[in-house]
Image 1 (cartoon, rainbow, N blue to C red):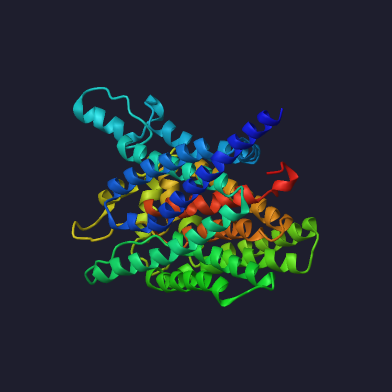
Image 2 (image 1 turned 90 degrees about the vertical axis):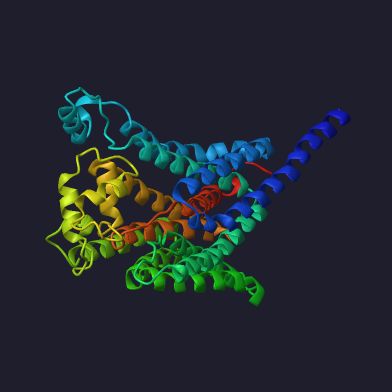
Length: 434
């Protein structure tokens, strides 16, 4: 009996060392992920897919059975919901005949040969986008598995903040090396997420009354570098998105500070967020335009192009990842260096279709509510859920204000933030003793 118990203990101890190695490997991936922005898009997609799959296999082999059971218990619903997006992308690549994009019918008429087309206008680009989405899901699963342990979760948080600093350095270098008037289009998502994580982490440190300069140095540096980068990328438009996310973080902190009941806090937060959203929609700069471009600058030269693309987009979309290939056909001049729509939300509607966009937006709002309640229900680890909720709000607000919101290099940071929040939403003591 004693020998069996010792063997069981040994089997449980060996994975513990292996999972820490997997944790350090994954933290390294997070820290170097901003470098993906310096390579070609195809190479970045390949690296993201391979490394995220390797991390998933490693953590699946290393994680202890009790931790795996806990992750499965709390994460299966999230995984099932998140899988709807790549499933929809895969649906867009199927030969659907009458549901296919009109461009396939035009091509069949021109070739005098029947073509069994699909929703997407370019299956290769859509498959590449599916790989990016699956890489993000792998990252979120790995982060959730690692973050089951609070010590490992703190390592992930530190790696995320370090990645924000690295992202600021590499992106600033890329902007500095670009020729004047030909600056690359940058995604503001990572800086927006880092601001939420950094501020929430700093508030948590200050709340423990054990705050030190060393404990606050990393989040402060990450937030400062992210704010500086946002100033170069989008200025006031990005600032509005960052403040919207910080509004969620500050609400969580205030409700926890005053020990408000969870139901009352959730009702108050929902009322405030609903009032703010209604006010923003009512006072948008371009009320005569569709909502997805209603917040764009009136001086934006892409407004007319955006209207034309939205009017021509079919109900099922043009296919995930096809916007860059589609936009040159709407360009008035072949010398334009950068062709884009006014907002990222408009691009999402064009690629995925109106119905899918509504479902995705509703899913994001539900996820924000889940993370908000999870943050209120947690103790000292509340900032993981608060940062994820604030980051999703910043993502939604920014998508209505900026033309670009996501790039391949953002996969690791976004997946890590969401994975940590999913894992830390429920206290381990409520489920199993580790």
